[in-house]
Image (cartoon, rainbow over all chains, first blue to last red; front, side):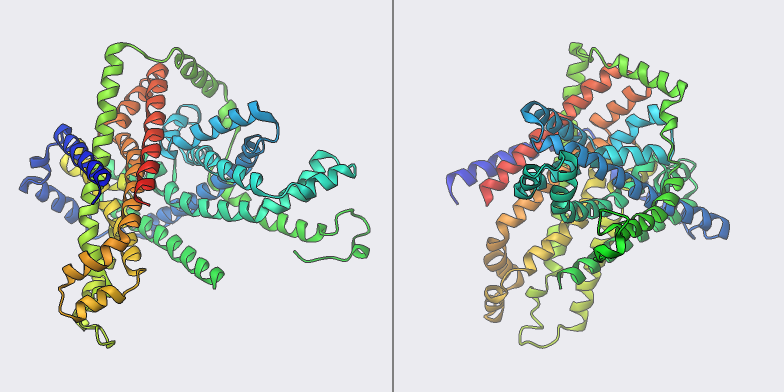
Length: 253
Length: 280
């Protein structure tokens, strides 16, 4: 082991130690018999999960709402991301590039759940807020990826069209855009998969879908209802994982 | 896209107009109901009351809150956020590593000769994989909500929420990392009588170390974001402060907290990139 690895390792141990010492959590309370009993009580209260038809229909609707939030959110994000990526790839000068990059970094750095919390002020509780929150955060993520794609493609087709008198917009749609389209689609699909997961919990801070339902029923200690929603969440996320895994295998084969 | 011969589309300059139209219609039939489900309504933002609230909120953002006592409180909260993420991630590694070891098929002694794994071992390995799936399929914020209900607010709820969800995620990736290595070295050690622990420590782990560290550090970076988010449901740190400031519509405080948060994430990103470079 060399000296540097030793130093980094030492710093790591000191850092973790400092973190453990400064945490004020009531650890004895957390791992006490009393809290174990309360966890067990919550689990018992959740049995059997609610399964009457009317409630299941509501959970089904909320699941569809979750998928819809992720779909529309990602779609807006893809359009917004492209709009940010054009200046972000340096097409309109250095100043525009710097500003676009800053905007994308800020959008990206703030998680969708925090965006949802902020947007509740403007758009109120509900799925629309969740959609906007996803769109805003994902626009930052996709914008950066799109900008990189735009920078990496060949400029020759575009220049050739321009030399022959094609307008800038037409040249973009017929030469640049088709080149980046496959990457745009694959990035957007990857983010969509991510966003279904995010949309499932967005509602916890008021963004609609399964999360909002879960928060509502947990707040009222309706554990049987909460258990059903939790199961729906796990099934939805598991399904997305399974399908995307299969698709990836099928496409790479 | 289907190529339509130019003669068939005399009315258009675009030879691919038919397939474009088809794609557009197909997309709209999916998007329209989805938009309806999300109660998509930009007009809601332009509503007079919403506009007034938003404008007032945005107006209070400037100037940002910079009072020394507020900044001191924020500094403490920022450290708490880091501490929650760090302890949570360390616990997650402590959960994931043993489970990944148990589930590692390369360390199976019963299948050494090329035969089938013993039934009990195969069941055990499968069971561990299922435990990991369950752990990671419940998002950390849901764990936090449940813990907050069961044992009350606080750092411990957030730490355990990160530990459980990230334990599941790390475990899955650790298994993939460990099993993607050449099995020869560890198999040779096992065949010559080494224990599983010895085979792992001397053959598998040294090769996997860079990938192992790099993914764990990346997860720590994600945990910082997660720890802020969990604060929103009352689990301590910057997020909780942000939630309080948002609820009281104190824009100045919200602005300062957001800036601190963005800087924090940026620093974690830089540190994690540097650490990954060191181990590469």
